[in-house]
Length: 375
Image (cartoon, rainbow, N blue to C red; front, top):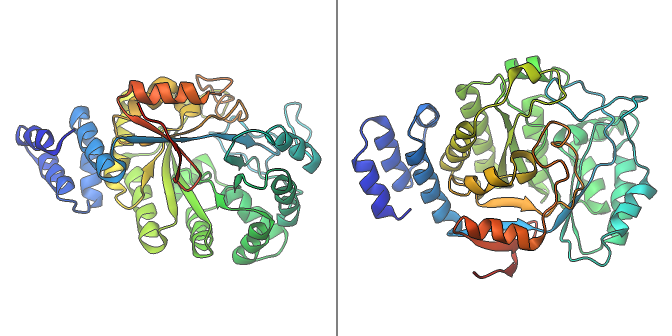
């Protein structure tokens, strides 16, 4: 939306939201109270307009995607998170654990492709330490020397470092030498410790998650950030989460993108909670884009929310839709996501973006254009 149209829209609006909107247009940082007021607003159209204004300032009309695939080395996990539909335990009939040779064979399928990123993440395996995963990275790097390796959530990293009795910095150096280039944002869930005690009491604490990302950023490993929303958290919890990310980003400038992750209810102990509406999804994208003024990109992760919702999110502040995936992740399919076999061709992804009135840009993992696809 053009700034003149947005200013007119704000002129027809009264109260706190109008004042917050004027702060957004002026480029002023919002307070936690401002963020709460946005979440509590029922004016979804205005929220979308404000989010699009912020997006336009950061990335214009461009929407990013990449060509990627996932490797999930194991779904065996030491934790028992109540929202999780993915994790199994040793001996479970649905469990899997891939050897390094099996991981290498997966990578070999992409030797002659134009894939630019491999995303490696899975359960927190009880028997594997940082040295094991470094060997895995070296195997992948040997086969795909030019492909960016994004691997291991902070939760996985904490355990593999502790199991090997190394510090975070030492562990990252081991992985970096083996080929690690960035890390995903998983495991953050919601930072409020009272909520974490109810949904993932055994898991890495919120401050520990932040500290691991801080260490990564300081040695040159960039990352993403996430927030699991739509379960038992409040708007106050969401703003607290976003605020902590914003503070860390002020310090390190190491987050590439923020990814809201919707709680999906199938096949987990929290199924009775249900799922929030599409309106709530769009509001969450909008508020995230408006509030996180120092994180450059907001990602609508289409395997989780579906293609239609990802397309709509582009009108509520999102400027990235992740990648082609090639049916290589099962995390959200197992939790009831619409796409049970997530894969999109480049042409399909470009069409989805163009239908939203935007310009698709194929990117690498650091948001540098690979091919600028013109309409």
